[in-house]
Image (spheres, one colour):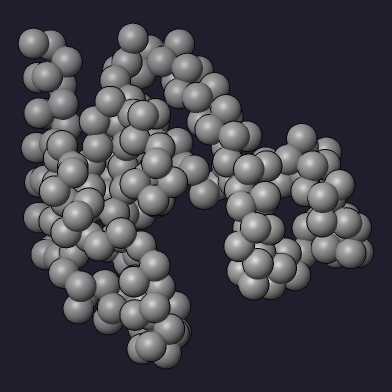
Length: 202
C-alpha cells in the first residue's frame, strides 16, 4: 500500500508550484478542485442532483451549470450552500479515493491529495500525513492583488475566510516555505519526499 498525503496551504501561497514539482518527479497528485469541476458535468450523478434541487434555470443554453448563477444562490443563502456541498462533496471524496487506489494499483508508493480546504472541510481523515505550503500574509496579499486583480479589501476578506495559515502550520506534519526562490522551494520538496520515504521504510 502506498502512503496518502494531503497537500494544502492558503490562497496564493504557491501550492500549484509545489504540485508541479511533485508531478515532475512522477508522483501522482490528485486535484480536489479539478474533480469538483468534473463531478458537476452533464450526465454525472452530482449534476443530476443539482438540477433536481436548484431547477433548470441554473443551466446555460448548452446544458452546463451556470456557475455564476449557482454561486449567487448559494453565497446569499447558507442553507442552499450546505445543500450544494452535501451533493458535491461526497462525490468528490469518492472519486479522489478511486483515483488514489488506481495510482496505488499502478505501484505508486506516495500519492498526494491536493485539497485546498483540507482543514476547513474537515477532510484530514482522508490522508495519513499533511504537507502545508505557506508564505507570509503580506506576500499572499501581494500575490492575490497581482494575480487575481482584486481590490485589497476583497483580497483580505478571502484570506479571512480561510483558516489562518499559522493554524494550518501548527497542525501540519511537514512544512514547505514558499517565500524564497524556486530553488529553495525545490530543495524543501526534496527534503519532504526524503523524510516521507524514510518514514515508510521504518
